Image (cartoon, rainbow, N blue to C red; front, side, top):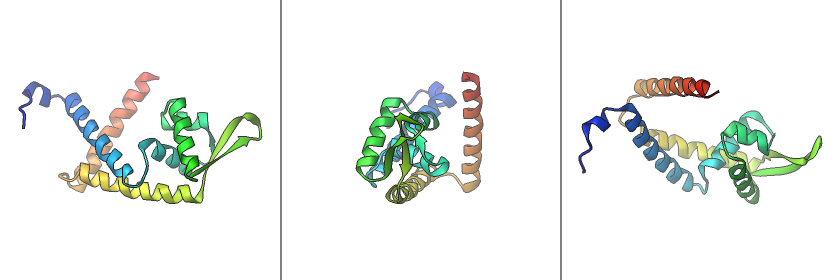
Length: 148
């Protein structure tokens, strides 16, 4: 294994970046095993939690670019995981709804992502996992407020 300069490995920003790359790869692999992608998970989870929504709403809730939302919804609709219908209040807009098949796919993706969490955080006991999640949540909330 290559040596990494200590001044890097002592920086939380460097460590977070390295872990993010590793986490993304694990999640992509896990979702790939169930024929899905991370964008699919975001959209299905938002529909499950908040109900039917416009594509624009999904983009905001999932922190996704409009073109990525459209592409992911097209893929999900082609597989029967979501349905798109014209909004009765604005025929130019589509309302996206989770289907029964989509709910089953979301459950498969939940299981795959749970396994990813176990792989990613394997060396940590449950209490440390909870602490890490709490600290990351606090940091993210702080930096999201600063951006606004």
